[in-house]
Amino acid sequence: MPGFFEGRQLVIASMHQKEQVLQPLLEAGLKVKVTVANGLNTDLLGTFSGEVARTSDPLTTARKKCELALELTGCDLALASEGSFGAHPSAFFLPANEEWLLLMDRKHQLEIHARHLSLETNFSGQEFSNMEELDAFASKVGFPSHGLILRRSKDHLEGILKGIKDPEQLRTAAQRLIETQGSGFVETDMRALFNPSRMQVIGETAQVLIQKLNSFCPSCQLPGFAVTAAEPGLPCSLCGTPSSAALAHLLVCSHCQHEEKVLFPHGKITEDPQYCQVCNP
Image (cartoon, rainbow, N blue to C red):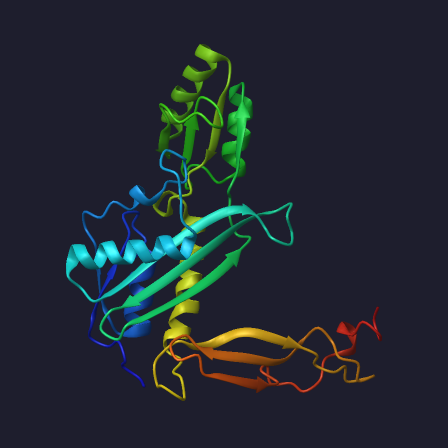
């Protein structure tokens, strides 16, 4: 059903300039007219720097953002993003950026979301007691193109200085901490407008969501018919042993829950022996 969203106004529930990456992708991919919910304070739902605790999971928080944007603007189509940072679930020694995007369509009573996990993040923080340590950290995380946060200690919530992108401001504030208390804590500012790496991951998540929104259920004809699971077992071309490669994809409609299994989703019926645990253990 091409043109399902075409011509409609979509409001982005953000105060951190995410429309810079989202607007061109959404307007091209969905043919919508994108606007921003001016005056929306999403920091009330939680901040990365800890002043406001995040009490809900990412999808619930994104839903609350959409609801606030719809109430504020009177639109019936909204999109919100929510990100989190921490150790990668399998490569736990590496930091990861998990992004969620939720589209809420009150006209059709739809909620469709996408999740994307990326290792492309500069998420980090450390204590410093001299300018050499601070400079090394700043260089490692991509300052000044990526913003920084300074505070007295890792868990200190008073007097936090956020959104630092000016080297002179960084050095002046850091020197003051060193002189007054001997050390300070520096960390990456993970708000999208201060973090180009995160902005890129948000864009990648949007592409996943757009693909999902342009996939229509053969049963109810609504968008959101997408892969929810991969079934391993593609046989080795040499010995026939089932491999870890996908034999089938399970597609499920996010609205009516209609399911279909698609065999050989990547267009091949066997796997190369180099990826076989028997032929190449």
